[in-house]
Length: 224
Figure 1 (tube, one colour):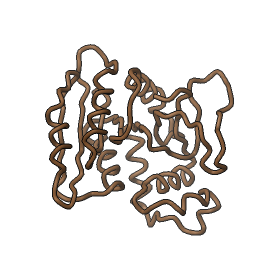
Figure 2 (cartoon, rainbow, N blue to C red):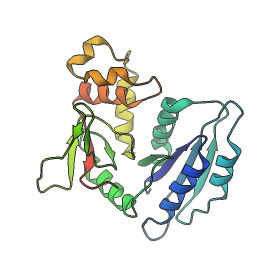
Figure 3 (tube, rainbow, N blue to C red):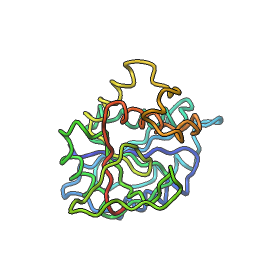
Figure 4 (cartoon, rainbow, N blue to C red):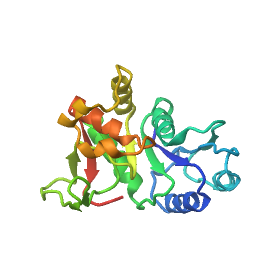
């Protein structure tokens, strides 16, 4: 099964439409079979009608398309967990929030990278974004030059993510094995900055997972 593209949407129809246009221009394997799933969170007054309209009217020529409208408000954390959980149905998942744009070659890279790192237990997941900023020091970041196409950091990033079903199941098994909220003791392994994120941010938990299990996120040298 080809990796599924999973989008999260809420109340930004123009952003979703912009992302869908960029997806339409990307390169995919011949023969189709690329699933597109659009997960729309519910607001106080139900599903945003314009977001639903954009999602349902978009014509996806590269495989099956499914629009999932949630009946209750999930919030960002639950939405991410739901979308990641679709690995159980589709296997590999490329997860995109609706405020992103993708490179025409994003799917080619993600497919190759997922296959290459599939059996490496040191990998927590993949990111499609090339980090250029060190959030700890508030300074520019440039990875050391070597002969590799990727580099590795023990923190996740939310601008385009990809997971195999095995990588996501490993995260869930860790999360479900005990109380995984950040505590003062975690400052020995997780940077103090993660304690200041809003409760609706999910990646501090994933950062703790990476630190606890000695796993890394794969980053490309050029953003996709």
